[in-house]
Image (cartoon, rainbow, N blue to C red; front, side, top):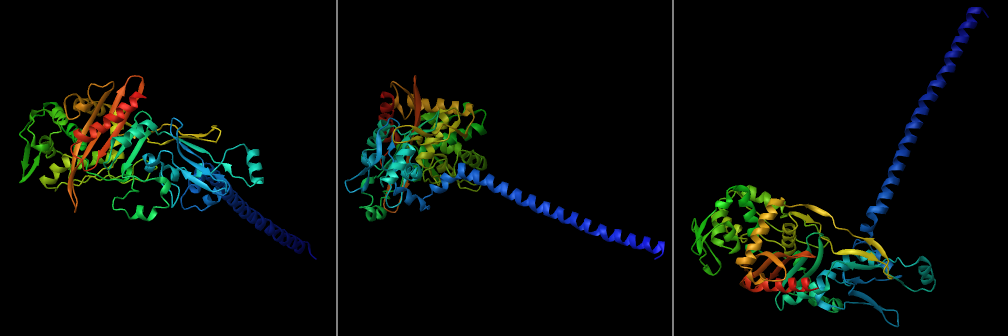
Length: 492
């Protein structure tokens, strides 16, 4: 073979030898991409698994739709629910045959807030179901119990509820239907939550058919789910909007002759009382409907709606309890009659007592709303803490200046207005009364409202919302109820 031919063959072999190397390099890159992709997916799954395990798993397990909870009850005795003072609000007793019965030492008084654990669940029994059905007893003790086929004691839930305040609120409503919510403004702790009509949580299973078919909606927690016209308690928001739109609000003046008419519609003061010449603060203190109907016509509906939305109207409230959205709506083309009614807390406006308690709490706390909560901590059956819940800020509902103004106005209600039954006490009270008219197919009537707070040196403030259904004016029924609660709180 010639030298030239040998060189050509050698060159071809070199080219043929280089081709597999290029293909191998390309395949290696593809393999690396796939490897890194699967590695990224694996790492992502591990991160999500860890997040789920530590952040989300309890919510999923505690879901009322999770049947896994039923298996916990077979080996765990449901823990106790306690008040902030350690009083037992719910506990499980076991008879000689090993049958468990849930008992409620305070009966109907805590029915809606503590709830029930049969035929479904409600209240704290529902919210903390998972916590009540897991045990942090010593692990050797749990192993022995498993071996002996004995249930381990579940963890206890210690609430923020104040037994004395809850009982005072329950008794203050008397034979009337209605609701009371008491909150510690500086922390958001729920001190009391009462709803009437009520029920015996120990007989829920036996009386289930009657309870769910009751015309009175006995199982409804009126504190968080009941929607009512706010009456004159809504003048808190009307006042705030007027002040925002009128920097010279201190020059406001109105001559009240007991009624106010515009475009053929007339608004009357309560019992058509004549209040005479009033400024804005006096109009608020005397709850003058005529004055507020008049100034309401000057407000910008769009701005008013924005204010109410910022005060949590038409929104889900920050609570773990089942709750209704408070409703506010006012458009540019609304008739004078609706504008006037809305300005005094009537018309289409509806609120829950819980919502009004939140607004009042924010006012007392210089505009800052703390996130409301009802569980202080969980502990094992020997009292060793398992998990603690701390106060947290929900948000700022109003400026400190706005809160200060409303504090001044609400104090004047007690000093010389419709809330004078709260003056001269060992504590300083402030608030707003309301008489909310309602009409149904069966009857017309008036709900009695009071929202307010009280202060005493050396003790945390308390904020309240009280509604006494179909009773009369706020000053005659809701204010005395609030006084009983304040008296009890500051006496202990």
